[in-house]
Image (cartoon, rainbow, N blue to C red):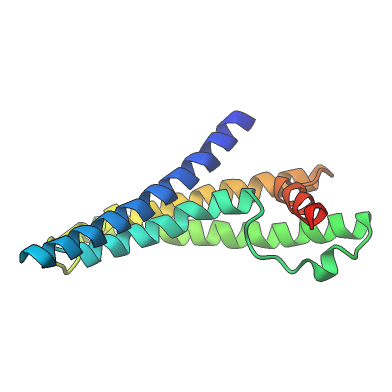
Length: 171
């Protein structure tokens, strides 16, 4: 199971990076197109879709690696017992919020598919396709937060805390 989770987080990070590369290639094609007098149709739309996908695909990987911004000034001053309790409470709230976001994004994909919504650019793209990347990224975040929450409930330190503590030792 650990291998599946790590693969999921790593794949999410790779997809996020791939989307950033896609944005770069689209902008480069648009610049070259202007130099030679042609237009890349719907480049802005596809770049926007890739930006949303990159953002949401990056959430799970960043959370797992301890890259999200946390206010550690108070957290690091707590003793071990209160710190674990605080982590469990925050992760419970975070898990509830992540589940809500994943549900809302998934429902948005469903509605776009049912109502056959399309983008307004030169190339009409069914909106459920780019929205699906947002839903999948938010579902991956739910898995990452659930993994950390489950570790905290069992009395273990979530992976991001171990990474965070390693970084604080380096300073």
